[in-house]
Picture (cartoon, one colour):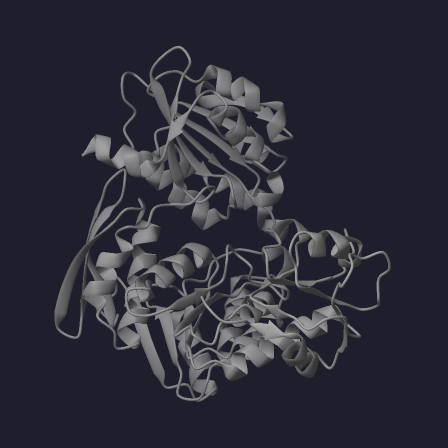
Length: 479
């Protein structure tokens, strides 16, 4: 993108701050001094773990043109520029609000219990076929990440896709009102974050808060197959929202999944809409990913864009690290294994989806299916039961060895046949080396757990065995 995002004058007017030092123009916005790029504006946010004011000098020395702070700072590089405000987080929200006001981009907001990030990324890829797209980086989807993503929005963008997240009631309403989407999509509603909600119905209520910021005449994109579809439609009706596009396998869906052929590296999908049908390939395995891709194309359909062209674009998508990426690991003694890296996060529905992907991958040369699963967090009092409820789907994936991590996974382990039980540990680093050293040629290894459970050490131990090739190269070898 060309052109400055912010100048000393525009930022001062927007935030009500006091400019100190030379004039400047910023081409990016960041809150992390370690990620500063030349020309960035640095915001010195204060949090529980660190105070951004302690890193202003580092940010300026790394190329930041200015820093937004709550007080002047001594011993900075010569000719440093600051914008002094009462509250840095409030200043960030002011920048975000102004960026939203001045843009003419079509704004799409995506939320859901699972699949938000991959759906957002897929939608951005689809829309890039038609024009310039701004989208949330990674999963910056909370009260800091969302305004940061908005503050980075260039005037030249014609589409903007934002991921909105929440784990408490009221959060999504505020984010939606800040983003003010023209399209709001809910991928699904499931039992996630139950630690903060009484039941799944309360989660549905909280997800419906994305409707609160919808622009007049805006559209909703809803999953017709989800159990809460009627509830969501009723909440939309309460707000006077009339334009709803649905997607799913149901005959009632506006954009309907009519055929799905799953494979180890992806799926062949056929959808129908407005009396037409379109077939496409998706380079990401799993029924859940296929359904999310239908949701992406429902957004394209709602925007009156070429669905077939968008379907061709998303066939290039591959899973990212921690979110289902398949990596071929070559072993020192010869041969290789397949690592399915699902280590970023976990919920009951996502865990079951990962088991389904594992079931579709056939080990070679006498290899085994090995599972390493860690606690699913934020499930409240239902946590132990929801872990045990994984049993049927886990066994359906035909595992040969199951390693478990965490207190809650011990509940599931107690129900497993003893012949399948690998080592159990409280922390993943206690079994990482053991698991890696047990691998042999032909094995397929699934690693999944909540972010807070930290399954990363297992991934690192396996990757350290030798070099790897990504899932795109694997697909070529299998075809």
